[in-house]
Image (cartoon, rainbow, N blue to C red):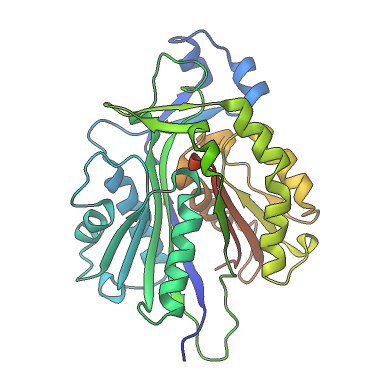
Length: 316
């Protein structure tokens, strides 16, 4: 008999360099006022050329592991959500395992762009439920600065780098699952609305299509994710949406009807960090004590591929 899983700890990491709107206004035709009014971002963190995405992932993973009071030997599965790893092999998960000294885990990367972390979390939960894993490390990490065109003022103001991680463990017999059923899917025919393509790969998007999709189609899907966990949106203590743009997050959170929830607004400080955005924002809420252990939190990722995945989790 296999049981559900729960998140027992989280951790996050951001590179030291802060890039402000004023800095960007010095290199492209933009302004602090323009960026704030349209996307709500003030600052973002940028990794150095010698700081690959697996290093960002490794730092966040190490913090989550330490917070869980575990050793690397306790982990049997490493899942990393990323779409910005330059090398195909060894994959990012294998490199994270090597950095941390995790002996012999199943190590897989998962590329669902901005919805990557919630897909990875569901995958780890399923592995635990199926009995093939007992303790997983789930990481969302992206180095968007490496795939953005720094001369394109419509996209370069959006992105940042970072990583967030969660430790997922099997529940004890009789213990209520701490990760609810995932609701996931995609809109393949609209997949071109968000792209990281070419050689070298470059990020591009049809901002208006994404905005319309996120604000009109996604609220009902996010509410359905709550229903799968048997919760009304009003019961949620927090809502952590993919940190794409404040003008997407605020209307989407309002339409979900989570009237008592803290709404994560980490995009203001971190920009759009793709797969890192949800675990990064969640870890900060936990660190600041804005949510407490056991609180129900909706995680909802959406974006690249026009994929989405959401689930209600219990705060570690």
